[in-house]
Image (cartoon, rainbow, N blue to C red; front, side, top):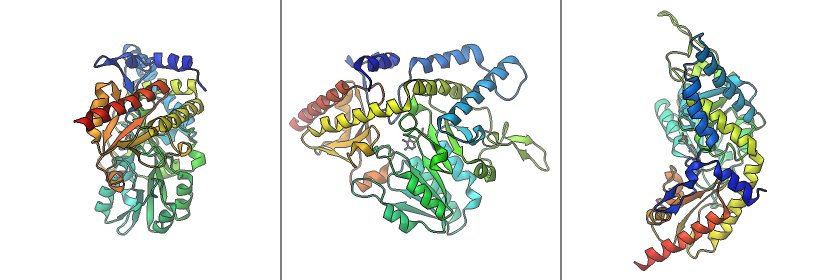
Length: 411
Ligand SMILES: *Cc1c(COP(=O)(O)O)cnc(C)c1O
């Protein structure tokens, strides 16, 4: 467990946390949307443009060799971070959303009329819409796993839905709204029994759970850098080599080709087959610094501290009369995300008052409208914690919510 002093030392590495919002200290608890960046990451960005900037895999000159080397080192770093078998299984994309779109586009030829794809009620829009579009194009069917009252996936329903017609199952590892950690290993194993591929949307996972894609035995795993202290605009698709080899290229152009000829063009080997055009070189290299930051603290330590935070948040916020949490509040099954509403107050009004107090939460449909429908609301207030948050900030949130209640109920 970290001492207060250690957390303060970690906080000191995040310059933005010193910022004042309307003359109040910033309480940043919107980490499920994106995390703040430590100095190490900020400096890596400056270092890239002052010392390395050059295109990759192209020229023989010194700088190009250096940027190529650094990019490939980060690919290896990510391979180790998620325990993938080969670094060629790590495809750089813009992020989770693009990774899912890549798969939805590249498996196109595997989906026939009448086939089925399975997702769940609690998916982020980026794990819904690409499959809707694919199903529409191919006259395939999208099946939705229902939820239990506590927001957990209804596994019995999944057993009923899966069949030999299922070509792909795509499920989030951690819900970005409820914070519930889904039992994805059971989903993956049953899907494989029916010969279906599986994609896991892991956007909320890296730095929260020690990831081992080989143990999970998932076919695809996707996430972004920006929710794990890294830059925006960069993420990965992990895929098993033998499956990625089968798939069509996603985008086409430079870098992804071996030989271009008007009669026949041949494609590059993995991973470059899926990396058309100049990649986000800076993003990749800077992400490497974010992984170093996470590994220095240790994923298990981060996980342990965040578990304490969410446990305390549940206890502390439960004391507020009229608060309604969504989904299970069993902190053992949860990452550090909690969503709620306050009496019949509008989430937007509450969020605005919190903002005036310097508290950054997310309000609204949280990119999961079907899940909002499931709970019969149009939006929620979401607090999501990170390694730099403190118990004191949770108290401050509670006080802010009490203040909001007082202001809004009196007028
Ligand atoms: C944030 C998030 C996404 C989308 O990630 P981008 O980085 O915006 O592409 C998808 N799924 C989940 C569960 C998320 O939390």
